[in-house]
Image 1 (cartoon, rainbow, N blue to C red):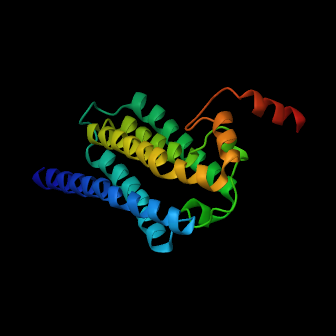
Image 2 (cartoon, helix red, strand yellow):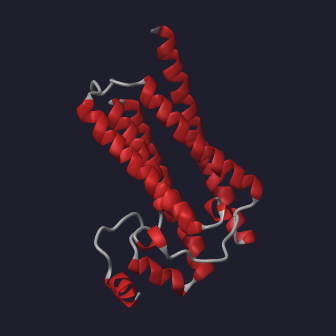
Length: 202
């Protein structure tokens, strides 16, 4: 029991450290955007490691802290599993729309992606990860996993609004402004009038 608690505490500290380190990481990304117009390879490696590291740690936390909020049952595992799977599918659709893996990590910024899932969400991959975290927390009944899903949402929202969106406005200009008017930052269930017209026109 003591070993399990020590493991959870150690994992929580690592996740907190990763969250804190996203602040200087965001500064470096913003610098790269201003200087290069895209993310440099070392910073892209850092951002990828931070994202995937947080994901793995959240899933492990959900397992190791299972039952701290409520005891997991079929009534939590099934909805949690569905939310998790839906999130993974959204990530898949986002990467499929990108076409080139370099775009996933900001190494390539030569095209404003507006097709596929990007007609429904401007940030489907962040949304997908968050749904996976919520699904894992819901299924396992882990209070800590819920907490770190909230931390992820707050950090990502700050990163999007302070770092990514200003860059995209500078880089793509009016096209990005119009895109923001058509498509929600995270998700919109009903299609905008522009999207309905686009679909009707084929």
